[in-house]
Length: 309
Image 1 (tube, rainbow, N blue to C red):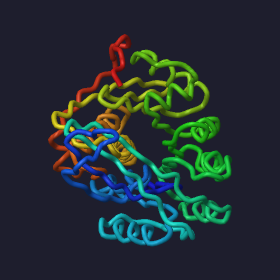
Image 2 (cartoon, rainbow, N blue to C red; image 1 turned 90 degrees about the horizontal axis):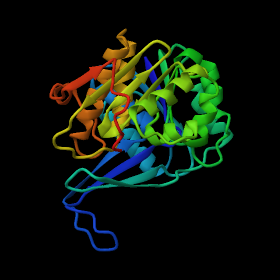
Image 3 (cartoon, rainbow, N blue to C red; image 1 turned 90 degrees about the vertical axis):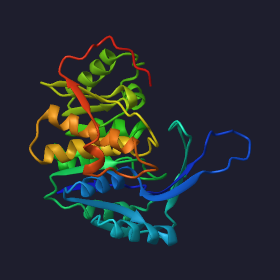
Image 4 (spheres, rainbow, N blue to C red; image 1 turned 135 degrees about the vertical axis):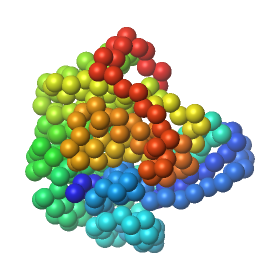
């Protein structure tokens, strides 16, 4: 079973507009609300596609109660740590071209008892433990590193900034940064596929098992000590990029949990991520959505290709 931990979950409200006009009144074409947060999205995508997953998360207030009910309605197994403050709401504004503008609330602070309860809720027999998303203000800086040390060869990290750097120092099994997060992590600008590969290889040399770099419309890379794989899929009619990276990670972990190798895992991840971009809001794709996605992959990418995103 794949377990996801989301310390800072959110209700995701997505509003669709013809074109976002900053500083003016915008009339929405429609809106939707989904349970959100990186680890929550990973678990939702896994369950939607028949994999066994458990979402561990703190929830509080009326919005937290709504979110727990929404996860139950979607059939997503979850363990809730109750907190006194209300769960946050994130807003995404998406225009007709799929361009997404996000406004994320900071989220409620977690007490030491809350983080201890979250850590205790993770089963020891989890096949992977995905530590996903931002940390609320005031969280012990050693919270994620301690979990990486605890689960060692099964710890997966998808966060950013200082929490990512601290977790990476403990040698997780897999990390999934985007290009911006990877550049910040290695302290240099990444302009080409080759730059991303070099950055990923430096992290593998430092003790990270696998780097899966999500590059948006430019594709994704798998880099480990022995393998290099690049995969890409074209999305003809993008509706929303919210949660696409989470679905990519879900696809990769689902494939690895089923015993598939690096290229198959990355291809599945890219298929799930691309399929999610074709759906509204932070909806996660099902088998019928993924079946419509064509993925191309190679073990010999053109390292001189310039990144466009």
